[in-house]
Length: 388
Picture 1 (cartoon, rainbow, N blue to C red):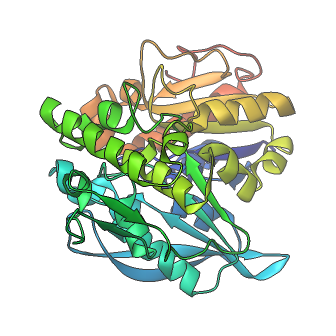
Picture 2 (picture 1 turned 30 degrees about the vertical axis):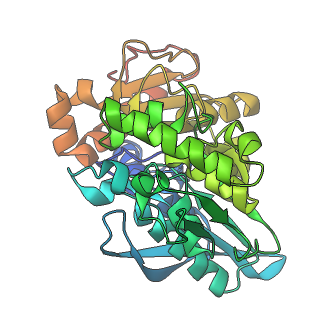
């Protein structure tokens, strides 16, 4: 009987991590009914973080909340309550993607006007419920507001030179004169841990505006305006210059900076998620680990889920297999005993994207056949018998 751990990230814009894991498992068990499949869907702080925890942690409960989305309209969202063996108050997990995320805008981009108010409102709801600790995933942001909307929802005030509240988003930051954090809600007793998969600072060529602004609808002039606005924010916040240069401060349009100003600590998202879902113990008991994401490319080694899971598997002496919507030509797959591209299986990216669950099932079956033939006990990289 083969013991398989499925620790895949979401296929962004296509399928959640939990749904992707189920599809892979279905394909494997169709080929090998006796296999024991342990589903541990993964995330790195972005879209699918709540789903990953909900699927892997017994007793997790979704707590509905209505928040103000990045477009200024109400959004039905939720935060997740996780039980703790040592504390009945538990941990609250809040995901920026489902409260202030870019996916909530569809094909529209709000550039300088999107903000993180909804994320802050969901954090406040978790604090109101009395959790002893919060875990905050900050991927997939729609805004470049430095986390100001979030901080406002937690009690801070940001005003112009006339003492009036600034308007939401990076556009409002252009008028910022004072940042008053005196009424910010305190951190919960166990603190706040922030999950992020990027190490960008707030400002400069690697900063929030320059690197991520274009994804959010900012043209060259908009990027320059957002950079000036975020620089002004860093000057207005106590110790802002130090916080702005901290790794991860530029994550989620500068929300990392805002959370640092609150007193939260930033950590690599995949590592923290793995700890909370007990991935290391599951991997140690497995014969094979399957991981992956939507697009595996040259950037995937920098804190993304597949690279982290492969490292964890190697440490345990367990082979890892990769499944991705696409595997880019610049991707390094030597760490994987087998790799499968859904695009290659389906014949085109369009066919793969149209029915990802179908091709994930096919990938699971192909990997099961590879393992049965003894093909996943040595690194083979891309182009294995698994159909990559």
